[in-house]
Length: 388
Image 1 (cartoon, helix red, strand yellow):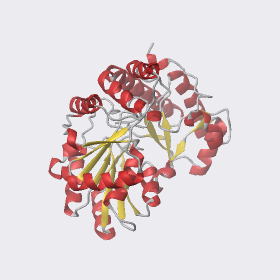
Image 2: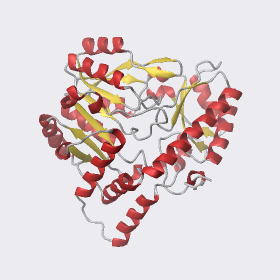
Image 3: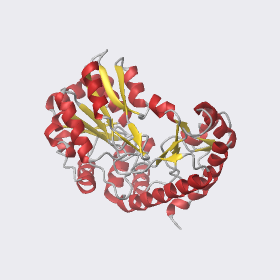
Image 4: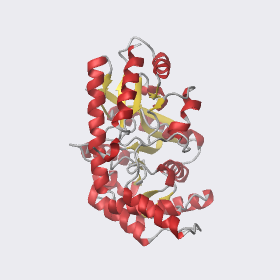
């Protein structure tokens, strides 16, 4: 029996995923398979670090530690062959606020910000909120996976006078882990039009077997001074609540612009649990992560087999990374609105593809980071709703 088979009740724990389900889906008795957190207990070394901090009993203002910096550098070197100079490493509460920080630091109101689609909604929501223009380049979907349309990408760069490119790698949704060749081609294109790249790599550690995450700075060292890399331990180890992330900037001018904007926004501190949790996860969490990825991929294979057997019209996107399945429901004889209603009526809560941009219409995002007992119940309801 795996440690991830344990069903841990989350209702009544202020869980957005579970306690927020009734408000979102309109019914209380629903299995939520939507927001990207996991129904698994965090690694024991992290829990032990939290306990030591709680037992100390003082929760004053915190500052980053040399041990935290060392843990981040060691983890990235070992896991991703990514050498980080400590003078280029900075911390912030979460990745999405850092995307906002990057947009505000590197562009002006009215500037065009380019991204591929479908994509994680905060990418375009934050861009709009900062009064920049959202420019989307649809990914090409074929053979159950996405690829970048570089011809369309260049066309939009040129016509829209793009000032910043937002990359999500591994891709959410869609689960693509872009190859070195793809990343190099992207970097050359951005270099041609002098466009900085903000690379959100929060899912970097959640890459499935036979695939490997390549950080943008590693893939394109010739362009590294125009790349800002965003990372965190929180997605990897199910620690979203501790609000801790970091970013890497080698360009001194960009460092100064970020620092000025971050000071103005007063969003430059980590809380003590973010500090000790990240350090413990990176120091001692590798065995837990190895088992987690095996468990998630087993869940993926189970869902894929059940859908192929029961609803073969639904296409299953290859899962190269993340724990978020992307289901192609466009061949079903009903529109997205009806699919959503049928799934809620069946008792399973998901996110519909159109919420990730127009090119996501007709897809369903389905979170499989849960015990098999929960997954089996949810898949039964998913199939029931899709068949209706």
